[in-house]
Image (cartoon, helix red, strand yellow):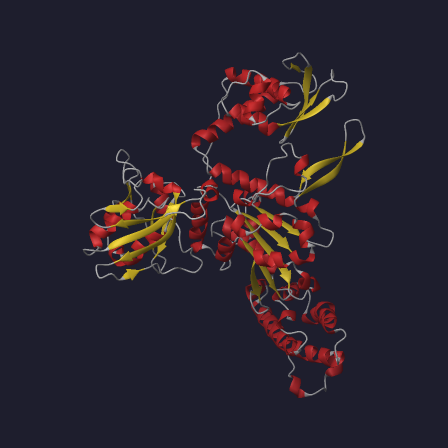
Length: 615
């Protein structure tokens, strides 16, 4: 698989059989499809006419789902005409002769998951909210389904053709779950309340731009609530405290930097009262770590989750029983030490006999990994080999001592129940994204933030990697993280907005006359008046050549009418803003008079009789 020019194989499926130019292919082991990548797929009838996939917007041209999608397209009417019982019994896949046949064409993801709770499925839409949902994993996993379609519905001589090749090393190393995860996230987005929610799921990164006061920040929170509640509501306040952990909101400004966003050194006070510095994660890295834990847990088996939960309880039980700073432990060569404190990341120990360095910080994650491994560690060499190091570090002797102490508590019968975790979306909102110095804030995350490089394929070393407990550890943004940015088009900093970021975000313009529903909080009469005044004023603003639509006034300004009247809104808010817009333009006074007349619903053609009053 190292050659740059790889051999292509052709697989032909007919009602009578399946053949491949690859001599390794066998219907008795469809699991081999994990090793191959599709290049092309089509249906050919007895006359030689070729039917290819009619692609939806944004759909990839070649994926593990292309062949079954063509089958659904060709035989859509016939599959739709099947009874419920016939669909549920429809054969889809049989990996080996000794394994059972996977069956079922379902009408929704929910129905599919009642039968088979996995991410490994394909959804085919055939209009009016109707779907075929079937099991689909590697490129061979739907051969049985395609062949059955030909047997039941096809004409003699019809065949499906699949061209494929071996995966290269990079493709083979990627997570097998990536494709199914992305597909599921797009599929699940048909029932949401907000029309922009689907855009975010498809694009991963979105920036809402447009005129000021159009409710972009509020819209971002609506979308977050919509996605996290799975379309039940779009009111952020309705999210539970647990659900709100799936949302983070920050606002960029000129002083915001990498240490705030990713990681950086922060001052801290040592036990002896002296000042020092400690490496701490920034708000985005903390958020991505939470999302990564959820993503990883959602891919784990019940057995693995129960083992991890048992280890967690075992460790908590051990540290709650010892007296911190008092109870002594001993490493193999006899040096005594005690645990002084424990947090989510570290175990801090004191070593009085060590005159040079009497304090040490151990990584609690590594202790946990040792306990979860079910291996026996009898000497420091075992620990060194377990972590793949050539030489032992100072801490490994203490890891071994703590491991043995915790392991001894297993006799107390610690048990734990773990619930299978569902993958959740995590939404990071950056308000006023263009007001920060983007390159300084994101640093090397320019690469990882790209929608095409989510997951381990986009892992990077951060600027402070050499200060991590494990300097070789990489950082990446997991697949279940979505980013929403907001920015005003008229902000002068827009002109210098980094083009690398423009390439990584989908830009959606929110116009001033959109999102008028936010005025529903006003009385019907006041809402109608607000819309009339706003519309008239924005028409006049658009007439000014130097301004245009980008400088129009959004509906959120008129929400202030709940507490002030229309005159106060003009004098205290709108007039000062508009004066800033036109400062330095020719005939400032005349332009402002036109704005005032429009706001007060006076026709500009009526003359200047009321100009003094309007001013």
